[in-house]
Amino acid sequence: MLRGLSIKNFALIEQLQVSFDSGLITITGETGAGKSLLLGALGLLLGKRADLSSVKDSTQKCVIEGVFSIKQYNLDSFFDEEELDYEHETIIRREILPSGKSRAFINDTPVTLQSLVRLGSRLIDIHSQHQTLEVTTNDFQFEVLDALAEADREIESYKRGLGLLKKKEKELNTLVSSQDTFTKEYDYNSFLLKELEDAKLKAGELQELEERYEQLNNIEEIQERLSGSISLVTSEEIGVSDQLNTIKTNLSKIESYSGSLKELSERIQSVYIELDDIQLSLLNELERLEADPQQLEETGQRLQLLHNLQVKHSVSTVDELILITQELQEKVSKTESLSEDIEKLKEEMSTIQSQLDEVAEKIHSKRKKALPQLTEELESILKSLGMPNASFKASLELQDNYLTNGKEVLEFLFSANKGGSYGQLKKVASGGELSRIMIAIKAILSRYAQLPTIIFDEIDTGVSGEVAHKMADLMMDMSKNLQVFSITHLPQIAANGQSHYKVYKEDIDNTTVTQLKLLSEEERIHEIAEMIGGKDISDSALTHAKSLLYN
Image 1: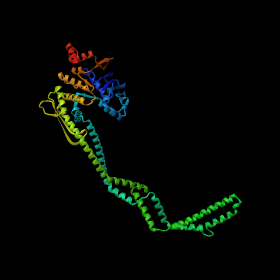
Image 2: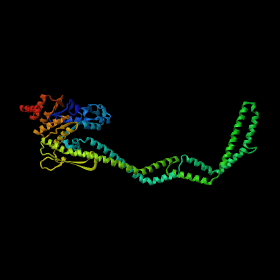
Image 3: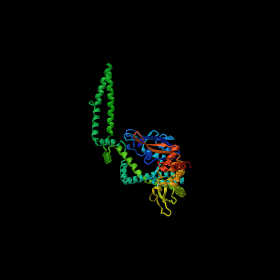
Image 4: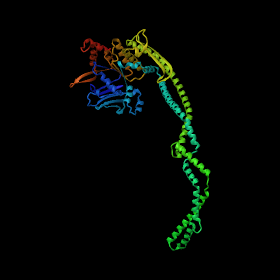
């Protein structure tokens, strides 16, 4: 409920601060006094867009702040989702800066307008005669019916199931689309994969093949040069080995004469040993070599195959070809398993649909039971509001499609006159009739659901006499369960308010400003008397006002 409202520098309001209690709160005032400004300020708190034209002094900041008691609204989840501090007494603030920029805060934390709209819709419900078309929408009619049907748990279960079904449908569409794409590419990918798998690729293979090919292709030159090198080492008298041996013998005979000669002798010994080892390696290498035209041809073919595959796949290494092979294996495997995945997903969806059908049947049963009760209560209330022949004809039919809140089509038809034909509310009900239907519906809802604060903005236009009394009683009855504001021109309704505020204009320092004040008992008598008889208050008007207040 709205506990307090503070407005600064908004339209004709310079500075206003007011507190509100629970129950029925009535607001009166002359036409043009500024009642619409209060709704405009509240609209900003509920997330409506703002502009600089609504600021009284464009050089100063406009601030509108509302204090709400929200303990009974179960809003913990909203505050968790928005990462906001939860307080039983929550403060919403809107600021319009001189630059024209607008800012919004919940408990001093900056929020987006979207967040403000989400919270605002749970706190205040504003109705005027021009905003009653909501009652003609199917969603609203279901909301009313469901309140009486007490099917909240089933509807929540249905919505969770429907959300899961839509998620699975999206997954299925993605898989089917993928299947179409992969199927078109499957044959080509399979051909490429077989070609690569048949090649039996090995990491690092290319360098080894290239070395082998070069060796086999040049074997005669290698053999010739190895043989020549061995001859230079082993040839008698002029061979490197004999020459080195002579040097070694010479140095060994003089090495005892000095340390440097001994060192040279040892070095020559090392060179001699190394040369002997090289000679052995040269012999081994020569013995290993053998011309093999067939192996040369096979190696060349293998190199050509790898080269062709590299060109085909636009890569430069065998490792990259191996990676492409793995990717193709995944694509081909995925295509082959997609049909199985699709069938599995269809089975899951079928199970979810069966569960949804079961829940939808329970919802339908509860709604069907509550529908006659709804029409009966509506007709009863409307009769007291001066519509004795108002009649509703409602039908509820199950169908195949899964809708947002069930599987039913609700047809809600209305006739205002005895013997008149039935038609859709928006086509056959007048503005005044829609206003009364809306009040009747809200009155019923207040008995079955926790509603936010309701503001009726001159929704009683065109009503008078006994009907006005009945409407006042209806609002009073609603206010037992929720906070109700009524901006009214009817003395009968104004007198029923547990708190009565007056909106008025006054001139201060040659400037017209709008004010709002809580009326004392005496002021209230005079206000209601003025509503009855005009500015010139007569004794009979005063008597009538007192009778409205105290009877």
